[in-house]
Image (cartoon, rainbow, N blue to C red):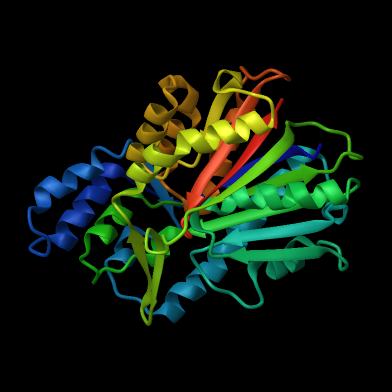
Length: 350
């Protein structure tokens, strides 16, 4: 089976702690939302301590055009993506010409040529490299990219696939949007980048095997999560019932996935889930009747970085792979929810 042989992450330079973010929101939303002080309590209940951004805090209090935001995205995404990739090559002991295929994931900026084309130039990747840029999968994008790389490597067992995910969620913030969804985004969103190496069977394996993948689509749920694309930027869409959807559907979906692979919940050593928010993780834990400890890497990632959309689940995976507790026969499930509404999951071992 294809394997995840290396993963590295990078964050932008501006660190903002949660009390500072709360004070920023208080000043911006003052006299704009009813019962603001009560609503600001969500900053204290997110489980987040700090986040990282590509622009300083004052930048977010000013209005910016879609053109300005997108220019900032292209510049920072290229820099952060290249940083994560260079660290990956050094960690894996590879040179850029050993990469056969690059998958680029994002949902928070637009670029044509896409960022992967820019990275090919910056990193001096091969001229004959294959590439697939994927836009619009939101928080599910990181897990979907792993699945995409897995299936490519199944058909090309002598190939190395480089996944690069960069999300700059802060650049989508609108200071003139006084909706509850924008306040939630202000409390949750962060920015970051990740690079992952997935190798086919004919490449010497150094990381966990990807045993199986699963996709689930929820019909007639287009309004649950996504962006309203407006002239001034991307306006966030969050449905407050997402934890309810998790509670209603996730246990049955997991059991089917595990049964297809001759496993049960007792076989799972860790749930490496995208931490869309503390309430979402709570809903998973209750639905699975699982100990809190099985979600600790998701909790730690949320605490340290916030919700970075597609990148976040890859940060969770990196924390897990860096840990000393896993054994070669351990099973873990990777999963993330995204617009559609959908979920993307993988089963790994080792």
